[in-house]
Amino acid sequence: ELLRAGHAEVAGAAANLQMITANLTSGYHRDLQLTKEPVIRSVAKTHSLLQAAQILVAGLKPAPEELEKACTGELFAAEAANRLVKQKGIAFREAYRRVAADPDSTTGLTAADLITSYTHTGSPGNPGLDKLQQRLRK
Image (cartoon, rainbow, N blue to C red; front, side):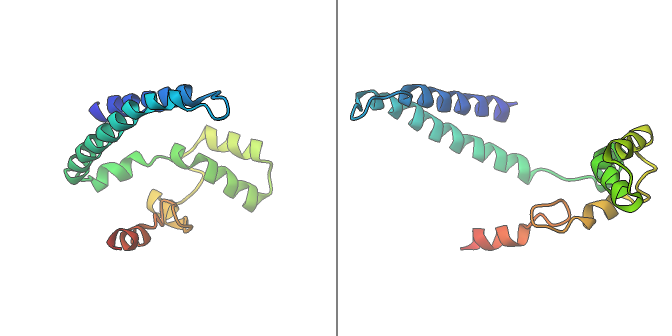
């Protein structure tokens, strides 16, 4: 809750900055002195939010069984419809209606199979953590 509320505070400061800097005439800069406070306040708030997030993430312990159970057919509805379009040659609208009628029976694949079938960087099957870790080590 603190992260959500803190984000709202920082987003509010961003809106404040946008309004201060909107429609400034050319060469006019005196209003910019009003930007200092929201910037400093937002940087400090963001720093404290990142510290809180670090504590939160460090304490997370995923429950693989519960996560797998939560990956129901609805999560992969668009993918299932696309597979029907590719494999059966039917219109996407019809494919999506079939999937909507029975989302768990259309893929024939487990959630783990579907997730690992995505291979592009940033996808659930390849989040690109190795590249991120390399960047963080530099």
